[in-house]
Image (tube, rainbow, N blue to C red; front, top):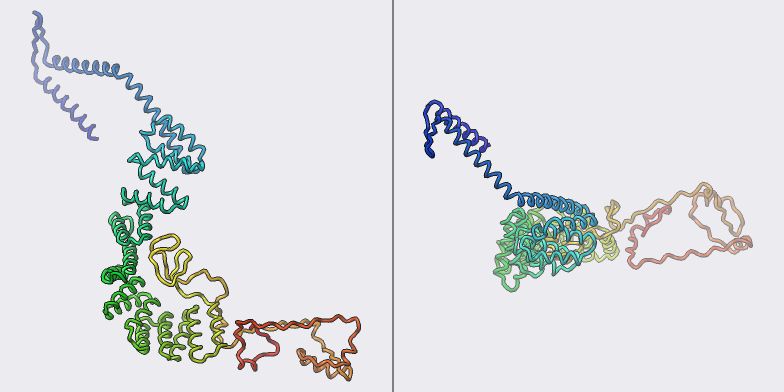
Length: 533
């Protein structure tokens, strides 16, 4: 647009110039070699312009003839380069589609048309073709050759990193990722792998610096960065708890400020404060974490904040937690444990049963079994509660990559991933869960209705006795089908000679862990029902 405007301005200026000369007549006289030439001023101006244009055209023709060899060679070179880039593009598409044969073919074609030192992507296409053909050694050598080229160095490190991951050599993979992270901290894959290496070595300060670099380059969101910092600071506090309590306290408090709802950070901060006899501040941290989400570790540390407290004092502190989070299974479990320690069995039983009603799980039944054993010592009921605990869902625990841990850890022991542990119920247990019949009173076992007898069997049962057949006996047998009359010697004599013998039924052996039957239930048994246990 600007060039068009400039052209129009020049044309307009020339028009104005010629119009100005046309309005002002005059003559121009030129004397040369004894001759005098006289023309009008307008004709002279046109002649000068024509001469200049002719000189410019002649100069362009001479220049074109002089540069024609270079122009022709450049035309063929550009055409060759275009064909090479077309082959390179087709090869990259084939490599992405998994067509190794076409990728190799286009690699050779592109290498003939384009020099590899001018286009580094040829090296990448060749490495990808080798990977598709299964030549991992050749691909690795090609990636190593890329390290000498500053433009291809990061690409080579990425390829070597992926090959090391494929071979399972985590040390080599982390080495390549570390070199890439030094050159380009914004690379997410390099930063993540380097972070795993630093956390595996326990270099929490280095990991914190890397997380700060990720945050500054906006690789991760602010909330994710704060979560990672909280995890790393908690791990640092745990590592320094014995060697440097002051540094551990500083790190734990900072972690708790970043994520007040993160239970491990709250526990670490409160434990560090309790060691320095700052019970009030540590208790406030635990109370805030409990209000966010009740956790048994928080409750355990809160109730035992002062080691010299009596059991009744610990029970009162547990009740205080319950007031902060009412109608929660963990609150009831906390009070039940404290009440059991204080020998307040009625409170312990009431809270344990309330926890079962809110959340049926293994720990609640085990706690109720402990209460039953401590209060009554009834082993039958204890075994029944233990049987229910085995079939109940497991209590929440720290789970990461299939590993269940009683304590929180900053990294996964399987993959080394940071912040892998989650507080949830493990799903590894298979089996029958507690269902509705467990709400029956203790000692009552589920019963199954006996199958109805076929019509062909609903006939009076004739029983042979000393006096021979008796119709009254038949009527009596009809009224009591399950009743068997004793058989006498005369009855044995009346048995046919060709009758088949019947082996006596073996008595079922009682399982060692059979909880047995409550004696009070013997009178409630129906003659037409049978029990599972």
